[in-house]
Length: 415
Image 1: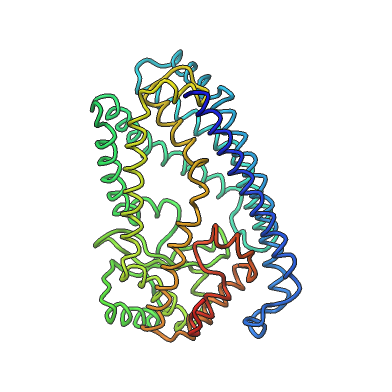
Image 2: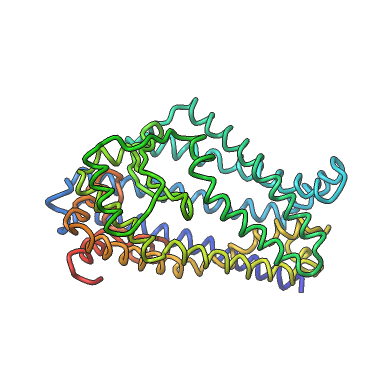
């Protein structure tokens, strides 16, 4: 069994990497091939220079993504079959007493090494690609401050939660996976409530919307759609990036609406209303709830499978580990699973794109669809989103429909 698992794992890793590189190569070739002509649907709205900028920006990000994919695969191999996890466990066993302390040390070791490997990619993206195309606004000082805040927050929240999970795994018998799932679900819901007021303000400043006319327009939209929130806020996104966005955050009565300050500068009040109506559509059509239910259901299924594997020696041996433990089982499982589930990515993307079309339909009923079309066109232009993605790459990855299909849908032509 161990040998079979090793072979299947290697095949899954190879297929996943090959698929990622092949799709990226298709994306680069397709975007380049359409670089010198603006699609007819946008010819009057987006200049050729902006279209070419979006193409070059997409190619640069995709190329870096290819290198990142290869690095991720190599790191997984080194951790598993290369003996990295076994070495970290032996090291933690010499430094700490008790299974929970050793488990925390193992996970921290994996996290630190993974973060150090991914840090150069983050730096190149932020200070290389994003800066080259005029999007980066973050300073090295703020970048480091964000990094340190993130580390401290992850430690303050993550370590106690992980300790609870390891304790449940050790103390709750064969049904530990159910108890872990219940704890994780409860904590996730609690974090949705606490995030807007306790966590997000650690990184950004949130101010109540002070544009009276825009606020009145938004409140009228909320009233006629029956949506209640804790307020409309503006986030200082411009101190890190010139990309614009809007989102809902929180859960239940704690929901709040957040606009990036960059978005308010990019769009007119009518366009902002249309964008907000789209986001409202996700809530009114229960897309958020559906995604949460699916996420919780999948996590329950994965934990159940791990419950079946945790006492199987071949599970550890097949992935390069000689010393079984609850913490090792957790790390091994969630490190190996993505290689087997990656080919299923298009299913998630398909559901997400359907939700986007439905939210667009909702916005078109509650506001002027022409304003949403204008808003989307500006956002495509200002965020350098390619108008000509490779169809297969888009179908595999993209959570939103391609620009041309989305605009056509809003104009009444179903894709």
